[in-house]
Image (cartoon, rainbow, N blue to C red; front, side, top):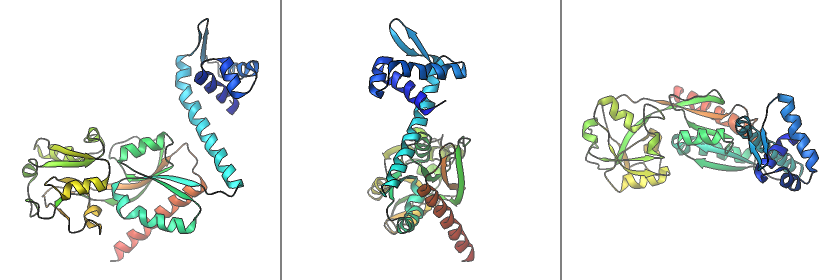
Length: 308
């Protein structure tokens, strides 16, 4: 199997036929046809159905097309990186972060990373864990520093656990429940979340819904679904809504004193924060450097915490 064979296959599908694909690739139609035929013969598989009405993918072709496109995407990225390297141009690393590491962990490391590699740009994406894992698998980001869902398939991912974080229930300063309440008392308030509520109860068992399910208290009403931690904080400060967030949110200097933890007698259900990347994707040298710095900072932070 060669890159040229994959490009020929994808071009035929994209342009709807051999003639148009040959023009697009600026190759002979005979050569393009031979590329695809050789690929089919090599693996004894029929990828394209040829009929009087034109061409269409076979069932095997449909399945294989996803792999072909992913390989070509990585090939183009590698070529682009080498071209930039030869021209001494700056490169970039695409990093995804979930709420907890975005508050205090990632910013410190990114500052040191920029000092180490000043010509490398960071493309930062904030999101919930399931969105970030999907982005990794689809090659939209190289690395993710994210909460690990308790139950998820990591067979195609590299996972390096960094530290554990603790979720807490929070509300505005002066909230009616700021001195403490039971889960059953909290159900009467609106709740705010970051991300899609359809993930709740699926992503992990420390989600908002799961918390109430464990207490048999029914399910709360979601008053706001926010697309960032900043919008979530704004909702909480200006209303009696509640949310379940990492403890680091309450301790952040921009939020401290405006949001308070609501004392509730329930288990904390700590979760892991990890650096995650796609197993089948070779990280760029810059991404490898960033991953190593994230792991190093986590080890140093844990050592300092034990010493205190």
